[in-house]
Structure formats: C-alpha cells, structure tokens
Length: 184
Image 1 (spheres, rainbow, N blue to C red):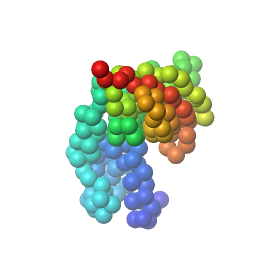
Image 2: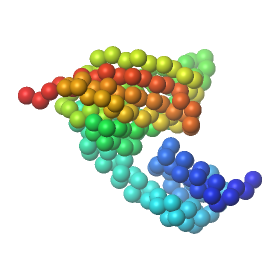
Image 3: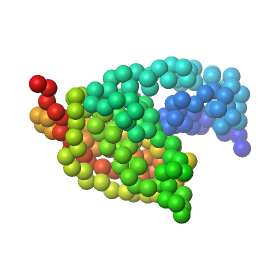
C-alpha cells in the first residue's frame, strides 16, 4: 500500500522520534521506498543523518551529573539538566514474565526512576517518593520512550513527572519527588 509523501514524512518524523538511531537503509526498508527518497525526506524535514543523531545522543550522556552512562536504564536520547530528559528502551525476553511476553513492571519503574535522577543537575540524587500508575502492558520487543519533565524545584527538592509511551500509548506515569545532595 503506497502512502502519500506527506504521510510518509509524518511517519518518518514519528519513527525517528521513537528511535533516532535508525539508518537510512532501515528506514527505506520500513517504508518500502529507496534510500534516496528517505534522504530527500530527511533533508526536507531538517532531520540530520544518523551520524549526527548519534552524536546528539552521545552529548546527552556527556551532560550527566548525578549518574554515570551505564546507570541510566535505556538509551538516553536527550538531556536538558533541571528541565527534561528522554530515553528509549527496547524490551527483551529477559525482562518478561516467564509464562508470557509481558514485561515486568520494575523495568518500567527503573527506566522512569533513572531518568528522574539523570535530569537533575546535582552530584547525588535520591528518590523521596513516587506516585505511579501502570496504564497498559508492555510486551517483548516494544520500543518504549520515557520523558521526564521537572515541574517544580524548591531548594533541593524536585518534583518530576515521568511518562513512558509505547508508540503513542501511555503505559506508565509517575510523579517523583527527588532530593538533590547539595554541594559542600
């Protein structure tokens, strides 16, 4: 089924938002068009090539203060300290319940909590409390996207909202109260 250029470009933006490290070849296979068509679409939309998108993800890790690169659950895609952060996680068989393909909730919580820690510009960050809700199941092979937003800061106390999506569907939401260790 052939889709219009406008619809393809809309899907391209959405696909790269979910997984910015896809190559032009992978995108051409996904959309059933030539690599050149993908390149022209990217150019028209102002989307850089995978090399530049990879550098952007790498620079997000360079800004981390409260955790090391390996301590963020999932792949850190963007980070604006004390404002917002995003990560992606492709779920695996090891994350699922043994008798089904449903991913265990503590993996979703770990992704959300590590992102809530990462977004804070401090040497050390502790989780004070969390009000969370699981909205829907996540299965093996899903590419889930977490977004943390700092809603308010009072002294060393941060109020952070974290939502996790599978495609456009929310699967987890949490209101985190985090405490930053003050320097000194």
